[in-house]
Image (cartoon, rainbow, N blue to C red):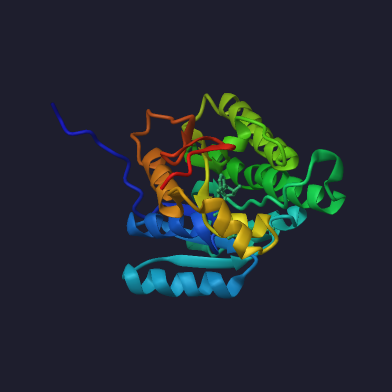
Length: 263
Ligand code: NAP
C-alpha cells in the first residue's frame, strides 16, 4: 500500500491569535518548523518579538510577522488585515486561540466588566476574525479555520458560567460554520482541551501563584505542546479529511471537576 500522504504546509500563511504565550506560542513553533509563514498576534509585543527572534534562530529562513493587537478591538481587524505585508496576506490557516477565563465566581456574582471581556475575547473576536479573513479563503477556495475551544464547550461546571458559555458558543459557531462552508475546500476544526498548564490559570486566578500551583498539584496536566500537536495533526491531514473536534484530556482528568490527584 502507498504511504499515507499528509498535507505540506511549506509556504502557507498561518495567523495565530494569542501567540505571546502558552498554546499559541507552541503552535507558532510547530508551524514554522513545518515551513509555514506565521503571523503572531497579541497585546504583549515584546514577548512576540522575543518569540520571533527565537524562531528565526531555531529555524533558519523562518518568516515571522508580529502584530501588537487587542483582539477585543473588533472594528480594527479590517485595518490589521489591510496592513499585513504582501507575502503574509493570503491566510491559509487561521488559528483563533486568544482566550481568557477570569475568576471562578458563581454566576450571580460575575463582575459585568469580566463578562464583557470574556465574551469579546473568546467569542466576538473569533467571529470577527472569521468575518475578516474567511472571505479571502472562500475566494481562493482553500484554507483551514482552527478554533481553540475547551472541554468547557462540552460541559458546564460550577464557577465557570461565563467561560463555559463562551466555549459553548464557539462549539455552536464552529459547527454552523462547517455547514456554511461545506461546498468549499475550507476545513473547520475545533480543538477542546482539558487542563493545560500555561499562563491561563494564573490569569484566571488573578496571578495567585499559590492557588495555581495547588490546582496542578498531584497530577500531570497537558502542556501547550500537546495542543500544538493537535493543531499540526488536523492541518496536515490530506485535503479530503476534515477533523471536526478533538477533545483532549490529561490522562488523570475525565471532566473539568474530575481530576485524580494521586501522583
Ligand atoms: P495563556 O497562556 O494565558 O495565553 C493566552 C494568550 O491569549 C496570550 O498570548 C495572550 O496574549 C492572548 N490574549 C489574551 N487576551 C487577548 C487580547 N485581548 N488580545 C490579544 N491577545 C490576547 O493561555 P492558553 O492556555 O495558551 O490559552 C489559549 C486558548 O486555549 C484559550 O482560548 C483558552 O480558552 C484555551 N484553553 C486553555 C486551557 C488551559 O487549561 N490552559 C484549556 C482549554 C482551553 P497577551 O496577554 O500578550 O495579549
